[in-house]
Image 1 (cartoon, rainbow, N blue to C red):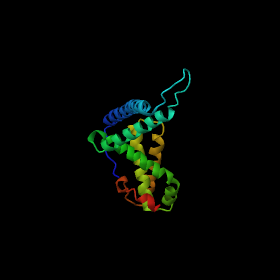
Image 2 (cartoon, rainbow, N blue to C red):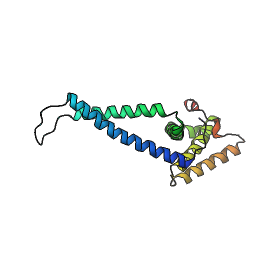
Image 3 (cartoon, helix red, strand yellow):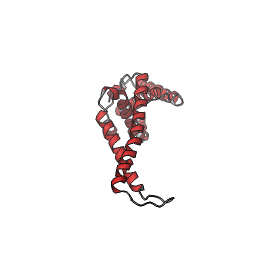
Length: 174
């Protein structure tokens, strides 16, 4: 995966619209699906002050709403409007995969394995990008420090490594 230049304002605007649209759609669809299910399959007699016994139908309505919203997002992920949002979502997934193996990757880097340097270079550069886009100013200085230390070590070894060399398959080799 290659790092892309992302316009922060466009990313923030589109992300907020996607989140608001998802939440609103989820709420409305859950109510609609729940209402329809209760209408056709719900308890017909209720006692004042008692539960209607339709919890399971409302829960099914919420699950159907989540599936519907997820399916719609999945169909829209390749649209230009979703470009930045989907890119950052994929980056965050890669961050999770790398983080789970970070100890092994750092050990491999200590053993001067080139793929470990490439993975770490991508990881720190992409973390910096995501933290900047998400205004995460608390931990960006740590990432800058880690990236600078990594680049110093790479330079000391005389290697030429950039984040663009990263391929997700490299994680399977560590």
